[in-house]
Length: 120
View 1 (tube, helix red, strand yellow):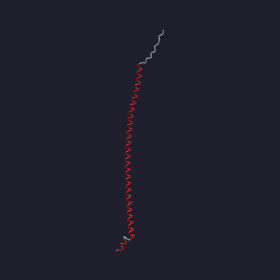
View 2 (cartoon, rainbow, N blue to C red):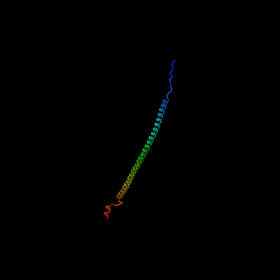
View 3 (tube, rainbow, N blue to C red):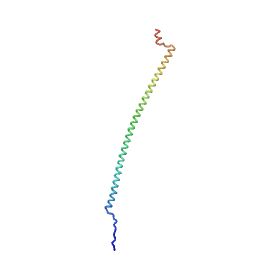
View 4 (cartoon, one colour):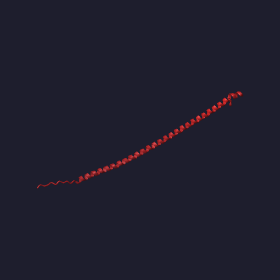
């Protein structure tokens, strides 16, 4: 009788360990990359938050300066308007005085300097 060949389907231990080792190394690599990726994202987000805060502070500062400048300009315009109103009031008072004086001259209630000089 012929000898029957027995085929050995067992996998050598080194092949099993290599297969498992490859997957373990791949898993560790993925985990390390995820860890550092999250760390970098956190760092980037912190940096972005800091930049946003800085821009916000600068914007607030410029807005405050603009408000102050606008307030000063409004105050200056109001002062100018008050000066113009005072000038207008003084001019009106002067015109009323001139009108009254002229009316009195016409009525003859007061005499001009020439008339006063002629009498002397």
